[in-house]
Image (cartoon, protein in one colour):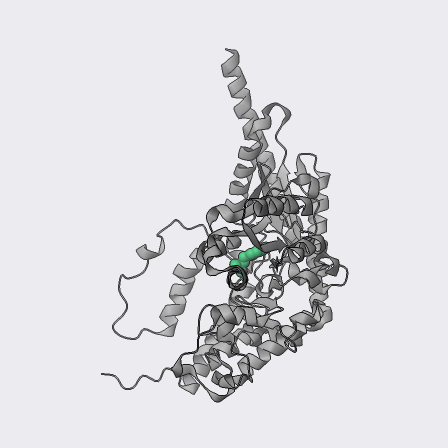
Length: 500
Ligand SMILES: *Cc1c(COP(=O)(O)O)cnc(C)c1O
């Protein structure tokens, strides 16, 4: 009925977008006033919003009011300086502007012809980042390899697993799918398991090898060798090894060089997941953690975690881009074009699962240009320094222990159970995490290592300063004191009860 809708009218865009930018800037100004972890109950929103869409347009003002009153209470503030949970997911002005431009142009860059700049900028920016990480030249776009932006590390490991699977099946025959075996440590992100499920790998052929505290939860080359030898002896076919630099639980670092050599000697694909810690490797003093990456067939780091590039932007490099294309390319008539047919260009649709793709290289390009390498290195170093300071605070309090030696910007620690209640350690720390997070003042997450419930303090939000780290420690200490008092009373009562 209404032909008057002008959804991209330039004047209205300017007016509304300015208001939105003001709203977001105000949000950042007041971000510390919100509880970091959203305190709403499940289903809260359906009680606040109508159950069908409006027939007639509503005003931007009304919508802003609803955002403040109804949406923000249900937001967990990942950009808060008091956010220390999981791993960081950095926002930055550069990343935000790149995202804004990408939304503004709104191209769909599946093949070169659909926006040559999108493909070419992605190749150039990933070459820049590869050089910054001192990745081997085989990962650069000039040769047989190259980089591609995936949405997430999960997609990255899936596409390389599919490429590796098909490459092996071309050698050993299609019927061998059931014999293919994947190796990784038991600290590897669950994304690998999901990739195996999607890729048709038998669940019982996914070897998540034991690790322990003696090696700081890194995968042992000896354990890997043993597992491979055993599998070969019973007629199975090892084809994929995933190593991690900076595991999600505790930032364990698998030794890439010996692991890679084993993989190579068995003709296996070697993938390195450095989703979080890859960012630190732009600093010369941390680069050694990816020594051995020369042996890898693929390498992944999430620029959207700790590299100031707004979600999503996961950088994946491979040495043999043909292997990816052999698994993922299709060539329907409706997409045929001269440049693609002549093999003169990269068509990124053949490097990923979906067809459509966003112009994500813009934000990474803007981050690298607006900040520059030196500032990015300082940014990483500052977070690691803050984590070191937190580690010292924990170590100075005899009621707590640092669980693993800290490597990057994650501190794993726990409250020690009192002598006469050893078994309560996990319960105690679980309680501590709950009470600390429900204050709304900070947000931490947890993991379990060797059966112990452990708190994770991950520094890395763009606004975090020393004062936030010391304030967070104060919250932890205060809540721990209160908890220890009530636990003492509880055990005291139990003892009395038992004694009577
Ligand atoms: C965060 C993380 C992942 C998963 O990241 P997504 O991009 O959300 O898929 C995988 N591996 C490691 C080591 C991670 O830290």
